[in-house]
Length: 139
Image (cartoon, rainbow, N blue to C red; front, side, top):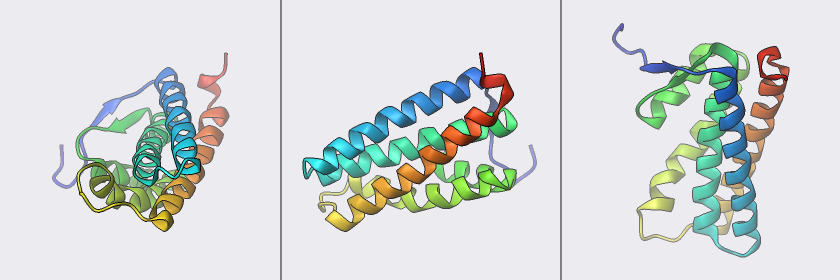
């Protein structure tokens, strides 16, 4: 594998649909947590929704998802171009919040949690459109 390229693994249309289902579940949890005022849970679930949605996009568009660091996934999406580039932009908004939400004792702010949920909503919406437009994901 050439230096600088992210490692990937093969993903099927069924995988794309499964990643999308996970993304939707995480997004529901993020929205519910935000409504309850649980900003850390909202942010963490939004990040995971975005990661799963990103995998759905990559699987549907090129049949391969990034394997390894999440930052590599953004580069993989960027390299796909088009909708992949749009997904990379949203994922890059979410990834910096992952560490703070999961490991940092500093509480998430309301603004951070809302931004995370909004970015996840955009990414899940994009993933749903991309997966739906992939003929191999239709029964």
